[in-house]
Every structure is written in C-alpha cells, then in structure tokens.
Image (cartoon, rainbow, N blue to C red; front, side, top):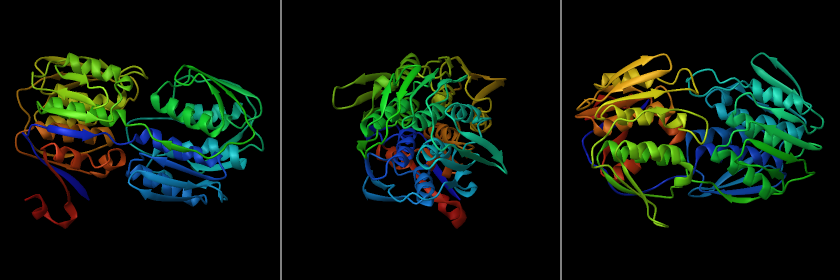
Length: 427
C-alpha cells in the first residue's frame, strides 16, 4: 500500500501548471461510444480513474492508446460488448456514464451499480427514470442495471436534483434519440458544459449548456473529434489552499478563475491574495495570515462539495471560528477525525462542522477515506510540525495527477512511499 510522507513547515514558492480535469475527461471518453470512429483528446490527466475508464471501454471492444503526455486516442469502431462488469465498476462511480451512450449506440446496456468514494448515498434513480422517459426498459437484477431500447425517443425530463452525472448521461442518451429532449433542472457545472461542447463538435444539436434547461434535438449520426480537455478547477482550488496554508507565493498556470468564483471569493475572505495575470496564470499569495470564513456547499455556481475538505484543512489554522455546512453528501466529514489526530479542533453537528482555528497542527499518521479527504490531509501535513504519513494514497491517485510531485517542485518535502516494503521507507 502506498502512502504520502510529508515533512511539514515548508513555504511553497514557484510556478505550477494545473492538469486536465478528471471530471471532464471521463464524460468525454464515455461520449466516444456514440462515434463509430477514432477520437483524439489532449490534456488528459494520467489518473487511476482514467485508467479504470480505459479498461471499461476496452472491455466493450474499444482501443485506447496514449500517444504522448496527455494525448489519448480512442477507437470505438469495433464496439461489440454491452456489459460493464462489477470488477471494473466497483471502484469508480463515473462508470455509470457509459449507460446512456451505450444504450443509444447498441440498443442495450448491462452496467453494474457503481462504487467510488464512500461519501454517502448517491443513487442513480434519476438516471434510470430519465432513460425510461426516453423509452428505455430497465430492470435491476443481481446488482446490475439492465437497459434495453431499440430506439430512444425525445422526452420532457425534470431532474428532482441537478445531478451532474445524471445530466451528462441523459444528454448523451438523447443526442441521437428521435425528436427533441428537454432536460429541466439540469446541472450547470463547467464539466457538463464541456461535455455539451464536445458533443456539439461531434455534430449534436444542444442548446442551453451551462443553464438549468437543456434542449437536445436528436441527430442521425455523430462524427469523431479532436479536443483538448479543460483544466481541473478542483486541482486549481486545492493548489490555492496549499499556498494559503503554507503562507506561500505561487503562480498557478492553466487555471480558469471563471470556474472558481465561489472558491476564490471564500479564499480571499480567508486572507489569500489571488490575482489573474492575463495569459501568465494566477498569482496566489498567502503570507497575510489565515482568517476564518464560513462556507456552505451547493450545486454550481455555489461552493463545490469537492473543495469542502480542503477548505476545512485551511480553516483548522484560521484565526477564529468557521462554520462549514455540507448540503450535497450526508457522509462527507470523514476527514474530521483524521484532522483531529493532527491537533485540529473540529466539532460536527449533523451536516455542519464547527472549526475552531488552532495555532499549530502536529504531524501524525492518518488515513485517507476518499479522494478529497486525502487531499485535505496532505494540505494539513504541509503546514503541520513534524512528519505526516497519509496512508491509502490510492485515493489521491484517483483524481490528482502527480500532486506530490507538483508540491515538491514548489519546495514541499513530500514523497510517495510503498508501506509494504517496510518502515525504513519512512526514514
């Protein structure tokens, strides 16, 4: 088992570039199922989740090849399978994204109910309800979703919750359906808009991307694309917190502030200086002390749930008390107990965490429980006195491309080790 070892107390200084967005790359790969040809993507992050999705598509008959750093070629001209087995799906919730496009192309799909981070119930009933409205027949059997539809038909769909993967799944299912589909209360996240742009470049007819109402007019056929994946806004936000928690000064390249308005607003409230420098990037300075700030996670454009744990790590060292409310997932405070092991003063009351800032954190052995929790523990370790060992580093590898390498390039004393090879690796 791999772990991240951090010797805390180093100020981050220098330049770093944000990788492509995991949550944009995975839907893009799923969309290739709609094309009987070869698509090419650049700025694809090399992540555990991307490799899992690659295996998922290859299991269906696709051929995926890395053509260079961040460049991936996807050949879906020989898709024959319709089953996404449990062995591949269990580690990653985004696997559900193949359901819609596979159903649209093959007329049927058999997909295991998905797994992923243990951050609470994230049911797929809205996906299934929407697909049924498009004409699919769906049964749940032995842990699998079995869907059939010789030809999908346009429909009026209202999502009770603006689910990101639900919106993406239904959008991909509808692009070649007969007639017009309207999805109301759609998710507005930048990654959803990015998928819509990819589909439009493929020849789809979609209006309203980035708004709560999507109108999709079905087309007969889609064509292959060459497309560069957007930068990862969550990685950018995580790097900003890293600068703030270490009182650093870093130029972050490839960062789109328009996707991070809620996060940037709260980080500025917490005392960080965040300045766009035209084409050069974004300058983040954190040497003015950390002030307490309250956050409440909300669907985009609100404060993202995927930044909650990282912001909490910052607030553990703030001057004052901050209140963090989690409204998206009911079990996303599992990092609290681990931060407390490092000396944080946090009290949880239902879906709210009250963080009383302390003067310092102490390095300790801690365990990652999910992707963003792992990032929060690494951030805390950067500022803590002494050594922090974050076990279960595979969580971090799911969504951050070489985060430890990027932090090390900025002056952090951080490295990845294999705990299975013995305690001497920590020396």
